Length: 112
Image (tube, rainbow, N blue to C red; front, side, top):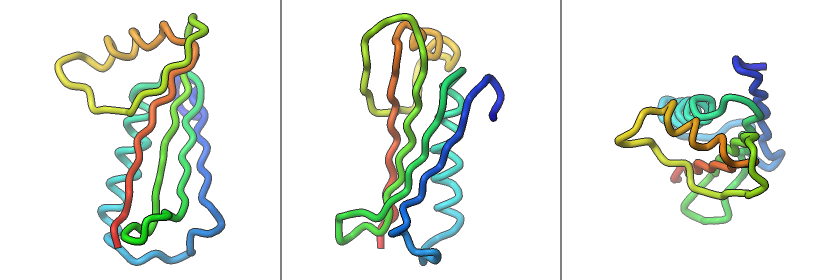
């Protein structure tokens, strides 16, 4: 359990090999940013990180983070997770509380 009653779940497809060649520093940076941004904008709920092989021949692996927030509305909003610019993180987070579920996705690809 993370601070603020956030649960973190990670799923790695069994089709992803145990060893993947690439830049370990870049992979670490991507995962750290992916989870860090999800935690930053989630006060409660859960974060689910999925890693699977890509269908694209020029890509070896895809990752995705889904953040689910609880709020007061019955609306479901799907949006691409973007870096905030021009506003404070707390202000943006509070405006998200108006939605029952907010799904924020941040996807990455590791090129061959």
